[in-house]
Image (cartoon, rainbow, N blue to C red):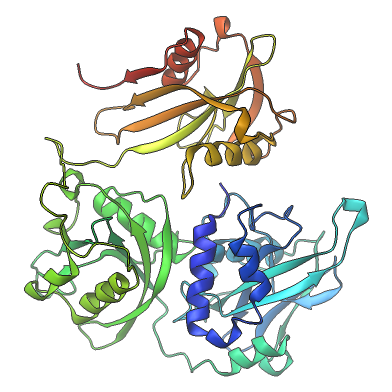
Amino acid sequence: MPLSHHHIRTTVDAYLARHPHEREQLGVFLDALDRTGGDISSRSTFTGHVTCGAIVVDQLGRVLHVLHLASGKVLAPGGHPEPTDDSLAAAALRELHEETGIPPRAVTPWPGYETLPLDIDIHDIDAHPGKGEPGHQHFDLRFLFRLHATTEVPFLLQEEEVGGIEWRPLDQVTPPSLREKLFKLPPQVEPETANASALIYNDRGEYLLHLRDYFPGRIWEPGTWSLLGGGREPQDATLEHTVRRELAEEAGLDLADLTPFGTEYATDDAGATVPIAIYAGRWNGDPRELHLTEGVMLAWFAPSDLHRLRIADTTSDLVRRHAASRPTAQSGPDPEGERRASPHGTVLNVISVHLYLERPDGTVLLGLRHPDSAFAPSTWHVLAGHCEQENAIACLIREAHEEAGLHIERRDVELVHVVHHIDKPGDRPRMGLFFRARSWDGEPELREPDKCTQWKFWDPAALPDDLVPYTRVAIEKIQNATLYSEMGWPA
């Protein structure tokens, strides 16, 4: 799915906190973010859209530039985000790899810029009548990386877009604002490795902390309460990949949205300074339900309780700063009677939307999922997606456009079925909302071939054998005008 508006807005706000004097010059970008119409990460949003660039500095202090054939200009590698990019920094790394052949593992984020761009630039793009593109603006977020000193760069240029590369000294970098920021960077003495941690909070204003094992001399900060996270590994393209992998490995957690909060600096047992990229995420689950593979336990704590814990000052300060930035959050436990825990603990259900698209002849649209899909590979399924920071109908309209190029109006949508299901024992429960589109514009097209390889209308009386089970049930119930069903729950 495309980058969330929340991720882009949070990144820009964090950038402006570091460069408040640039707020006025970025006014047109901020206005575009404030408008709700259009996807600001889509190249088809011609009121202006986001692009991502990679500023790569080698061990001699030179900056990588490429000749972009389309514009004839020598610029840093970069381009448009794709639906497969899970962060703005990941989009910059992908463009770097595609345009120059440099793999993500050959570079590392510049310390202090693990989650934030070094520079944001707004520039005009000429119209291309042959492509049906009017003149528009690019809001270019430029992320800073350094080339590993021991890396032998495997250049493989994208010949249809890139005419050549060159390493320019700092005094030849353009534009001047970027050159000025590069000159102000401090000398680099930090270690090559990077770390990332997750600052997880709930709607009650509490924070999820991890009690480390008490193994003095074997682990860092033994017996203390800390954040979940760890060090970057070779397979991690970005630090967001690092923190997501660590959450999955340590606690089986998969958060829908993680946003950069900043960079913290800790001191290890040898006295060295360790930069840690902090990503914030919201979760309302019960930590007792998680499968913890490292440490002693996970628990929720209010900021006012931290003084009772054995916890690093840097972690305690971090939690309090984040809590202070959320003025609407409650600080501490719910008032008496407001917390209604189920007998098995509160578990956050996943909400997903599904499009029931039926043609006048009665046939129903299904898509064949990609063989590499994590969910139901090589299996037929209706067009579907998870709700982000949006209402369910807005999610449906967005997913229909992104996945199949269909245009649906809110007034033409009606809820026709709800299925509350668990795919297999131990999985998180899911609430699937099925909406019928009474009318729509367009014919289904493959807009995300990495997710769906084929669209086809099927007779409900002759559905394919390899169909997602709860989808089959939902279609049958819709045909019988039944609004609700359950699957996978114990009898």
